Image (cartoon, rainbow, N blue to C red):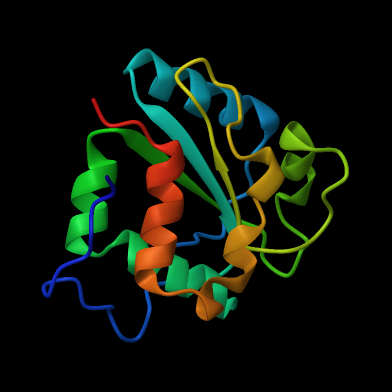
Length: 146
């Protein structure tokens, strides 16, 4: 049975801007994944940009108290800023060589560092067309809480 959002789960307005203008490399990404897995948590990598309304809405949902409580103990999130597709886009290829554009993209990994949601990593590109509960349900499908 999935957790439901409650009356305290109100989306923040304006939506947060979680993406810092930092250039990352594959080694940084690998280290993040290894460190999170070592802590027995699931890594979640989100590619996005602060100009993207779907990425900002996604972050607002992730900050809802019920969602945050669910995720905090089970996973660690790395937000990767793609800027105007001139920054960090080569890191898409770490997951799938066929990806070139389209954000936000969410990659949820298991405790072995394997991607669980390859077939639906682009689902949040339409976050504005989904309810906060639908977004929360998506994460509950892949994040395993102990």
